[in-house]
Image (tube, one colour):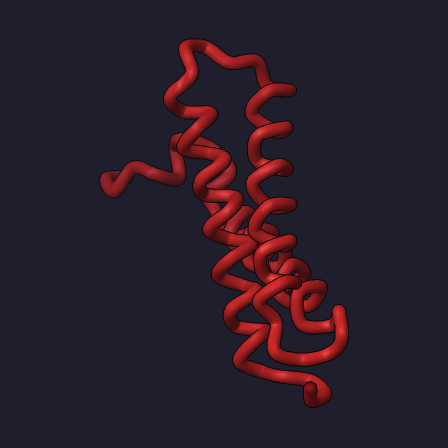
Length: 94
């Protein structure tokens, strides 16, 4: 086993993101799920993706999966911050 692996970090990013996407897909197939159920499925998908990422990590540290998860959260926050605030911003005609 080696130290830090950048490839494992990238793998962790996509596994955690893929788990969250899968949780969102499952929530979308339910008929009118409550907001709590949607968030629970999103968290369960992220946890499952993070667990698989930790098991698949080449490095001997927990750092790669943790940084991968932080990068996913950072991406989501960044996307949410750049989204238009209301529907008026979505129109192309002014």
